[in-house]
Length: 251
Image (cartoon, rainbow, N blue to C red):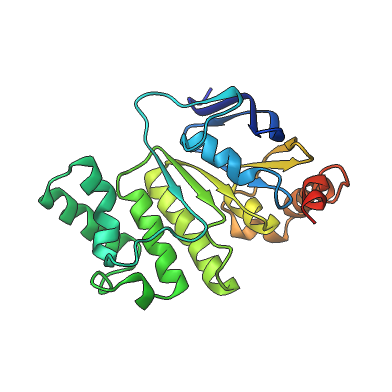
């Protein structure tokens, strides 16, 4: 049996009297990926925040083995506009107390790995959306996290750039084998990038579906019966009125 990277047990989260998550449980093996999908407002981002330690659980737990490191990529990239690409990439190492030579070597490797060479002196405003997202990915990876959390990292990108960065993320995973969790509204993206797929829904949100995905990372699978079966299974749960109640409540 694979070692677990993360175990979430009967997790619930409330904000005052508003219960957002209720009794969510799952386990993620080390080196695996999980795509989380569900209606807007169902608590997907909240779940990531609790796992990252940015918000406390109201009940239950989210536990990782020690020692461990997590990194979080936000929807809006989270880059500091007054820092260059080089300085944005180096920031996690600087905060950890790494020396100048260590930071320079790690940043140089990351620039090369993500195809950002030649852009190190630019500021975020001087970059395209895809380039900014590469920097955000690089900043998250430079400290070599055990678990990478991503909240709709490709949502603001055009389709071609989005597909390119999906492939880039997969290639980085193949080299590093870190665990990662991805929140998305895109079913095809979930099927491509999630070794496991979880659908959240309802109000409060609960786990509506958990799938092990045989098409993970396999572009050639996109015309197979297994692929279309996965797509149908996810859509059926998403279109269920009970699953969409969180989205309706926001309207």
